[in-house]
Every structure is written in C-alpha cells, then in structure tokens.
Image 1 (cartoon, rainbow, N blue to C red):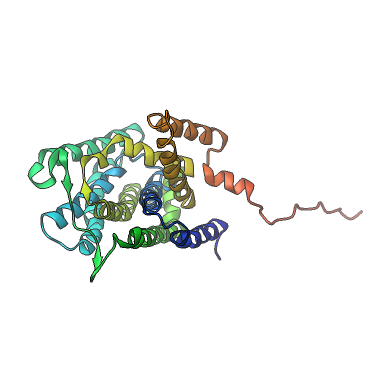
Image 2 (image 1 turned 90 degrees about the vertical axis):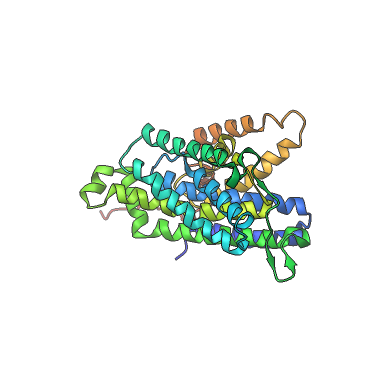
Length: 326
C-alpha cells in the first residue's frame, strides 16, 4: 500500500513528465535539469543526514568525484559518456568507504570536521594534478550524449530533460526502498538511540559505512551526468557555496523525508534564478535563502513536508466519544 507521500511523489513525476510539452524554451528546461540534479544530491544526502543522523559535510565530495570521473574518462581516456556515467557510481562508492573508515566511530563535531577535511583534501588534489584534472581551469568541451545520429542537445535539450528525470526517478525509488527496508529501520535506530541499537545487535560502524556508500551511488551518477550535460568540470563543484545551497534544500525540504528535498530543490532552483534576474537580489539571494531556511525550521522543524502534511486533509473523521452503559 502506497503512503500519501509516495502518492504525492508519483503525482509530481507525472506532472514533470508533461513539463516539456508546456515549456518548449531551452532555458526553462535547463533549469529543470539542474533542479533534478540538485534533487538527487539533496535527497541522497538526506539518507545519511536525516535517516541515520550522520553530520556528513563531505557529501559533495561524492558529487565532485563523479564530475571528475566522467570528465577524465571521456576527455582523457576517450570512454563513451554512456559508460562513464555509471562508472561514477563505483568511484563515488569507493570514496565513501575511504571517508567512512575514520568517521565510523566518531560523533558530533568530529564527524563534521573530518568529512569537511576530506572535501578540502579533494580540492587540493584536483588543483595539484593539473595534467590530469586541468587544475583551476578545469576540463572543458567534453563530449555530449548521442544515440546514433541523434544528439541530446537537439530539440531544446529534450533528451537531457527526460534522462535527468529518469535518473531522479530511479534515485527516488532506490531511496524509498532503502528507507522502508529493515536496514532503513536500523538507520533510525542508530540515529535515535545508538546504545539501544548496539544492544539489539546492530553494528553502528557497519551501518554508518553502509549508508554513506548507499548515499554516494546516485550522487556520483548525478555528478557524472552533470559534467556530461554541461561539458565542463571545475573545482567549484567542491565549493562551500554549492554545499550550502544543497544543504539548505535538505533542511528546508525536511530531513527524514524523500519527498521534501525533491520539492525544495525544484523550488529553490527556480527561486534563486528568479532573484538573480531582479536588480539588487543577485548578490543577496543566498542571504534570502538562508533567512527562508531559518523561518521554515523555526515554524516547521520538519521542513516543507511537515507544512504539506498539515495542510493536506487526512481523510479521517474525528472520533466521537462513546457513552458507557449505565
């Protein structure tokens, strides 16, 4: 039986499938594609942050590794982009194992510091290996996706739109399966009562390593698709600005939710772009987003998904008290 949130997700994907028939402009489709990529990153970040309670500030590392894996394979090694994108899942998962090893038994601020340090380490590695990564200039003019004679850049990016939507759909289905599985319940146990989880035979270290690896798979694929779509790879993908934007999508959308970050990614991508086109808001848009995040968390700690649940009718009639027999 599908839950209400899953029905909302299904309805959202049905609507998104018809968007290209309404908006034929290539720029609008571009914004949707970027929003889909952000939605994949944010919802998978929520798997480790919201469902397991790991304060992982190195999640964008998985995305960046996906970006540079696809860029190096296609630009330097001449690998077909269709093969490079799934390869990003492997390299991102391997990097997750490496990152998880030192933080598996750490708590609190130490996890934040170590994961953020790994992210910065990757930045320095990219900059220092300029012969392979392009250094600060990055790698440009990467090959784009084709099927036979058809290029995905044609028809105002229609092919890229539907491929991004399919990747988001697969990622979302994957997250729903993980969250609803016995492993998903063990994640919540580790998050809410670590000592109790240990007493019930759940390995906290193994659970943390596993969830980081799972959260890295589609994040790496999103990175590979991102660089193949934009045909460029640069160190900015590891930057704090991108990290803070995606984190705001997680927090505004609602942690411990699959639907929330997806909705927030769509909303914030278009809101940020709209503010960029208004005089005086281009430099202040991130401040506006930060204020919005504070307000949402203050009024509804569960994020946008909590607000939607409050507004949506439950379909249940209030219980009427029964009179006890005299």
